[in-house]
Length: 270
View 1 (cartoon, rainbow, N blue to C red):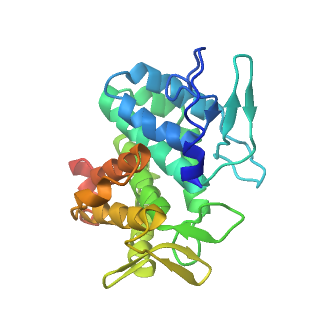
View 2: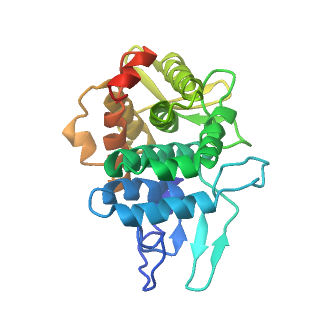
């Protein structure tokens, strides 16, 4: 689904907006915006801050499924912001935003923005906790039992990043999200990997096994897993991925598996 959405990101428009300063297209998909903002952060943290505020101001309380802390896709015109009442993956939107917040705070030392919006950020993080299924994996959407390997690894990264922010702020909730991140990590390894095989998704009891002849989602899922495990991803694979897929791989490399001891947070967490 995300591949289809990328095709809508090519029509440029001419007015300024916190979202359009990240991706200059009227169709706003927060997942892609979060990933692009990570790339923009080193050169223009103020634009990223404006986008972060926009994201937080547009959280759902609640959305059409009754969830709080999610965000819809939007269509933005010069005079209006129209919610589309849909999101491709509630888990991945939340996870990438939490990782963006972590990178922003580390880059700018602006922890005040985190403090001012702490409850909203916890609402975003709790979306992931709410979507955790009995097998420990995170569902992409509240109305379907489909769990993606890539999304789940993104969730590990997002929750671990957020737990580190909370730890730095001496907020006791850090341990809750840190524990969930490790539960999800263990569930990925238990449910979606065995021997040399990888499942790019699980639907109920059905596993979708990654085939190296299919770039997306199969080969991409394997590349994200390898990055998470600290294994090298073959260049011939990487050359087949688009900008956003490469950005996810870069994000995952920043949070690849570490010692499960919570005290590792005191050394930087990633």
